[in-house]
Structures are given as structure tokens and as C-alpha cells.
Length: 231
Image (tube, rainbow, N blue to C red):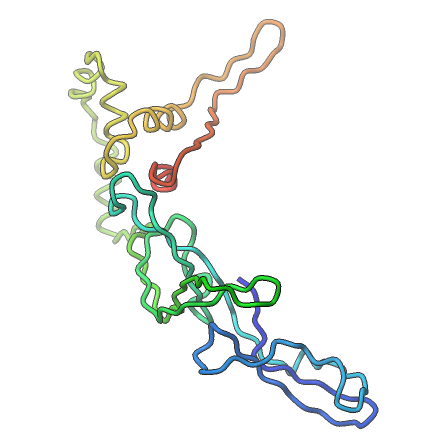
């Protein structure tokens, strides 16, 4: 997220006059964009000083939104579109969040060496960003806390866990239970499961230290849903 100037104020020490200038571009709702040349001198070639405290800025952010992996056509990578978010919509979501964006669809010309080419790129100027999935913070009532403390004092009888230990495919069962909404990717789920379980910290006889935590490097196509698996 960066500040975007929409109105600049300049002061001329020679003439002791102050004037302002407004800026619009192709991502603004105005019909015609203004010149992006920042003034440094007036029409008489007198130097100008920018009054930064009197200028008007706007929070501006541009991010890419990718099609959901489960909605992508078979054999194709998920499509991506650039989103322009201003004011309170800037920094309203994080990488990996599933969002629904409502806005104005606009095509921008591509320029090469100062000249407009025949190709265009499409963007969406957002006016609403809805989070479809977000981590919820639990809100416990005093009665809920009392019940939790009461249950924690009771004796837990591990009946089903011992049965699971006797299964030969317990590793595959736990891997399939990880992110059940994402189908397939068994090898990736097994690697993440090893990351969650970790290992045993060991100190060898020669003084060498082997740490117990495990680090993984997950590399793959966008269709692997790496961000969703790591959440």
C-alpha cells in the first residue's frame, strides 16, 4: 500500500503565490486523465516549493486476484486479474485470503517506448471487497469457560486412539485428513504432516545438536493450492 497524490499545493517564493494541481489517471473514475508531470516551476520559470502538509493523498494498492484452483478449467492454470483498491479498501485482505471483489471493469492500453500498442490489459477498479474465509476468534461466554474447566478435570479414556495406532495405514489416514476440502496432493499433505509433527531434539555424544523442528520447501504450480494447504 502506497500513498497516491490527488492534489498537490505549490508555493513560489519569487511571486509569493500559491496554486494547486489535481491529478487523475486511467484508474480514476473521472472521464479524462490529467498530465502526470509534477510541476517544479511556473510559467515564468520561477522555482516552486511543494507544501507537502497541504497536499491531499489517498491510500492506493494494486494486487492480483487468482481464480480458485477448484474452479479452474482442467489442464489450465488459474487466471489472474489485477485489482485496484483505494481508500479504506486498501490493505483489506492478505495473500492467501479468498475474496469476492465487486468493481468497475476497465481496459488499459499498453505502451512501448511512449507509444500505445494494440494490446490492452484488463483491471478491476474495486468498490467492495468481501472476505469469504477468515480466521475467526473464539468468543467464549462465562458458562462456556466453566464447562471447559469442568471437562478438563474429568478422566479422559483413550479408547479410539489405540485402535487407530493398530492401523497399518495410519500415516495415509492422517495425510488424507489434512485439508480435506482439497482433493489429491497426497505427497504434499504428507510433507506438511511431517512438518506439523516434527521430530525429536537430540544431542549426540560428540556434542552435536540436532533440532527437532522440520522445515520444508514447497514448490509447485499455482494449481497445487500451496497457500491454502499451508494455512
